[in-house]
Image (cartoon, rainbow, N blue to C red):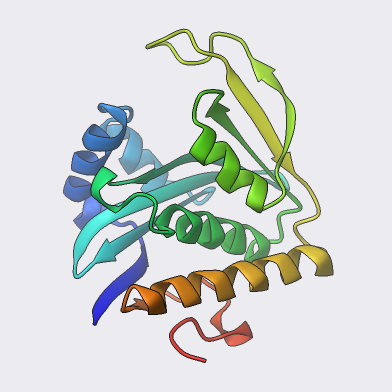
Length: 192
């Protein structure tokens, strides 16, 4: 059985993060940029690894009571396997643990798989940023999700945890959350 490890990004993971950034985004962020995020108490950087190989990561900034999700990336060889969903779940769960009330992000209008993922967590379109992506001039959708501290949202997170657990079991994978990033006391992700 393969192990998916959910962990906080630290300096030891920076070389793998930079490599994955290059693969997923063409080198969107620099070493210095990631280092700033690691050093900032207002940033949350989460990685997932398969058998110790980094295959995905995400980040949000804590701005007052809002989680601004800045990046989610999954290696192309591992996309469409529910791992982006796991990263988003972990980011939103951490935002709840930090007592944030809202989450927001920008996404390319053309990235329909990402938009679909965010809609599963009930993000709604709040507007557009014109010519947001410098490489293409493409507009970004601004997505917004309020009510992170409500019982309704906590139930949604529980539902998504179950879906992820079931998908990992189907893939003969187990989740190791060594940094206790998820609120695992609510539900086991490795068995029924």
